[in-house]
Length: 60
Image (cartoon, rainbow, N blue to C red; front, side):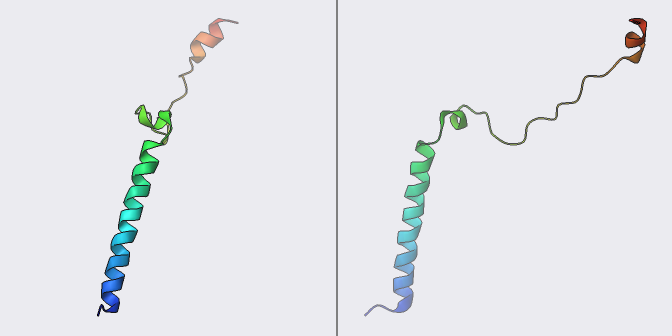
């Protein structure tokens, strides 16, 4: 006769296998943008172009 912990262990193994299969299926069906190496994380810090007040004043 199997105890409750045996049933829990078997259920855990089945759940782990199901999660692994689900993750593998989702990885294969990922959009092409995710596979090109360009991540969708935070963009790089883009600093504004430095202004040159001396150049702007010479145009007047």
